[in-house]
Amino acid sequence: MITFKKIDATHAYAGMARIQGSSIGFVPTMGALHDGHLSLVRRAKEENDLVIVSIFVNPIQFNNAGDLEKYPRNLDRDIVLLESAGCDVVFAPDAAEMYPEPIEKHYDFGGLETVMEGAFRPGHFNGVAIVVDKLFRITLPHRAYFGEKDYQQLAIIQALVKQEKLDVEIVPCPIRREHDGLAMSSRNERLTEQMRAAAPAIYQWLLHARAMAASHTAGEIEKMVIAETQKNPLLRLEYFTIANEETLQAVTGRISPGDRAFIAVFAGDIRLIDNLKLI
Ligand code: AMP
Figure 1 (spheres, rainbow, N blue to C red):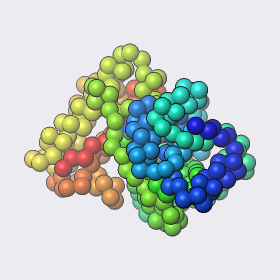
Figure 2 (figure 1 turned 90 degrees about the horizontal axis):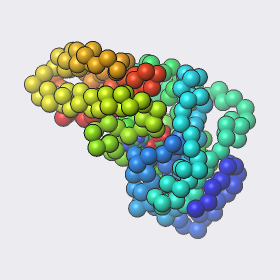
Figure 3 (figure 1 turned 180 degrees about the horizontal axis):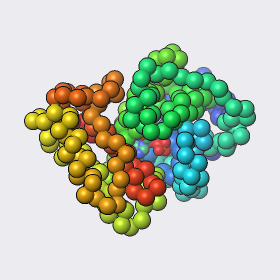
Figure 4 (figure 1 turned 60 degrees about the horizontal axis):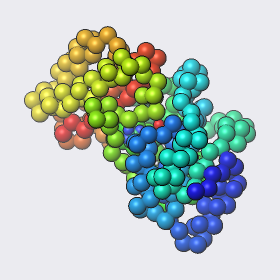
């Protein structure tokens, strides 16, 4: 496995691999890797000749300076994990390499970017789109792998590819969970023991929502989940929304196929998100 810190070296390597006829699978990450990330890497390895993984904590997608500062980082450990998962190339630039000057671009994703995460994290998806577009142009992938854990991000990347006419296939990958149902996340590392014990309730609320989906309206399910969260002193609900998985717009009445429940919760200052298809 090779590790590059520079854009030019990575781009030249990817370009050469393409000329030689290799297919390239790309997995963008912010490091502090867990089995959720590694499941994407393994899938990329199965479906491509060469796997490139980027590790870059992208400052322009953080709307909260404390969150950026406290975001877990462990490049040495990540490199060991990636090697064992079959990664061929790690691209780990620093912020000066990625943004020698500020990027002013402003994307419009037709409303996908203004709801849920976009409403609570202003500018977040613009920062995501800028970095992913740039990473695609550096790593030249045939396929890029994204987790459904960040479902809204996945929808926005699909819109970005269409809008920018990028020649890359976006491959959605299922959410990996801990044994107690908590969605794997780099941020879980920061949970105290008590918070960690409380956090699987998030998945339980989603399961409860799914169990109610056939017989209740979105409004009734939302009311139930809000009431459940209020009983839990360690978790503070930011939003619970039932939305159509293509438009991401909120559903109000009965639940239809393709509707999904989305949740964001704070444990202390640690923000956790999850989602589940309802029908
Ligand atoms: P991140 O490092 O958090 O930016 O995540 C990098 C990629 O890994 C994104 O496509 C995420 O959706 C994906 N990912 C993160 N956690 C999980 C998980 N628990 N299951 C599946 N994919 C995940």
